[in-house]
Image 1: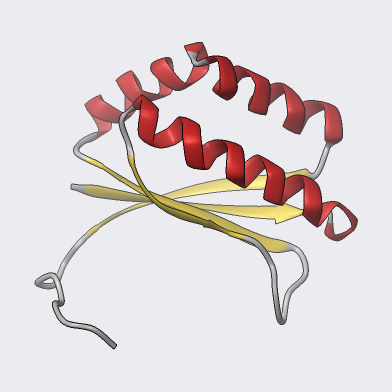
Image 2: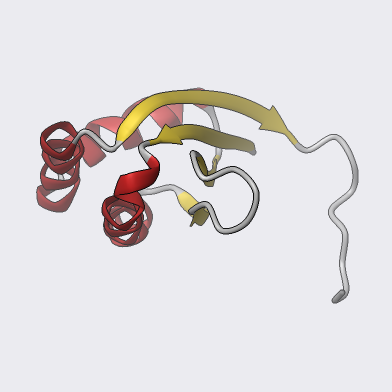
Length: 107
């Protein structure tokens, strides 16, 4: 299992647009085959950093997932929305694998 962490730099005056974008991915990403952990918008501290986090089985599965996401009507609409509204200034992906045992219990 791999975890993809997407680090976004967003226009702080367009936080509402990023939040709409995040809600749309909240529907499209699971439908297209990834295990969405969540999208996170700025709240305190930096007003320009946001994150999207999801799990996927392998990089090969990621390629198939990306093709499904690009063909998904809401996925296409969301890509177009981001390009039109220009709230994403930068986007970086980091791939991680779990190195410890999964932790159980509640906080």
